[in-house]
Image 1 (tube, rainbow, N blue to C red):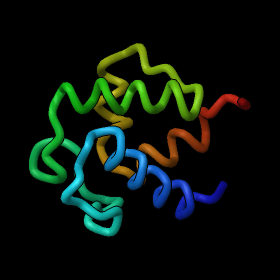
Image 2: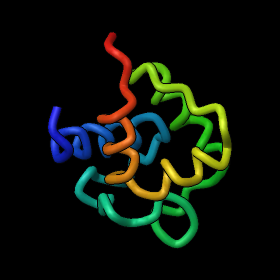
Image 3: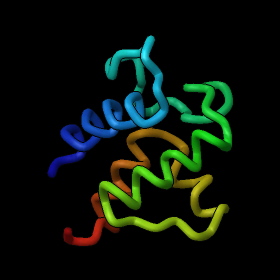
Image 4: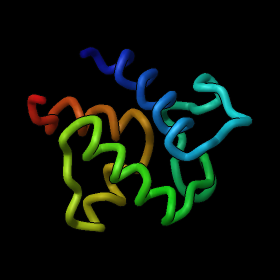
Length: 88
């Protein structure tokens, strides 16, 4: 899967997983922050994204410091998945 394709997929999955019903995938800038100023997600949302990564991509994030880096934007998250995804 290519980066752009995965970014589009992640935007849809995050909207669905977090019940962001008033958002469209195109509303999420792949380079904007997911937490704080950007999309404005919180720690509960981070847990939901961790579940999504485990369920859909076989990726477990065990170090919270690592998660902070990985979740900095959709693009960073997509690149992490592309390099760490386990075959399913």
